[in-house]
Length: 338
Image (cartoon, rainbow, N blue to C red; front, top):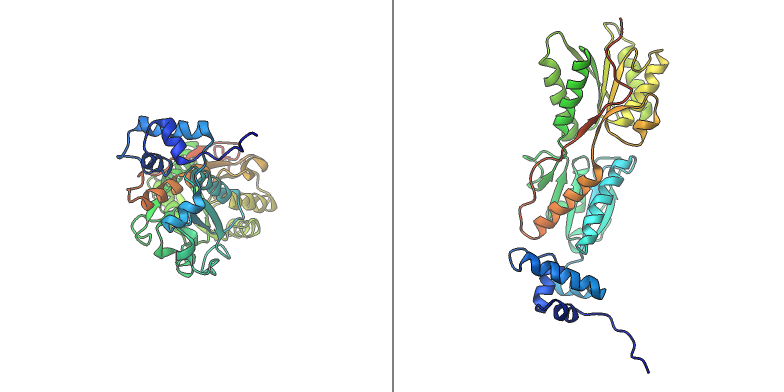
């Protein structure tokens, strides 16, 4: 009678790799750096792969007192950007035996109900967007290992931060429009109290002010298409010279601006150039396609999860902002005749 197949154990992996079970535990728990060589780590991972070994996470978690669960707090799920952040974070988490619970803060920002009986008992750590930071107090997430995304490094609850180089994004937009010959600008700013939007506004204003003969006006709108349409119409219906370039904090604001401009009888880019930020699918769905700053949402999520893993292991997370890139399309051109 054939013997029933058995699930490979860590001892089997150790024997196949020619190492101790302790070394297997270190490598598969991603705690091997500085304790075993990279060659040994690669040998253990290859042996585990060849044997089809999967660690018993349930038993391990009971032993260690950890749930291997991370909470990702975002302002909302109304754009694909935060879906990309989740995808990147979950991919890295899975590679390290963690799960990610996605939690959108109600109304985009502000307090949130605790989705757990006790966040401290149910979670190992939290990754949170700056726009959802107020939710952390209700979640007691500020008492857990924490990484903040898109946040002021000097004031993020003492947490590690991971940022996109959004200031450089504003610089790239300003340089592109100024090089095209634009001197009169309207900034359609997101009406959201968040560090990321404050940085965009500050950097845009500084770059434009550095060029003689420029003007900059600001209109604010919540990040919805209808609010952006209304704000654009109101800002451009008043007296004074009309701006030739409209800089939007977000692709959704730009889509709303397109509607407002059409209702005013203005053409993009013949009468006014328009830019956005994010490079969502929406950017190529509108006509003309939108010049916008591409933000790598998945890489953002990956870096956030790597940073939290570092915090959990007592290491210093990788530094440096994530680069962003201006994608030039049909919505920008030199200013037309008055």
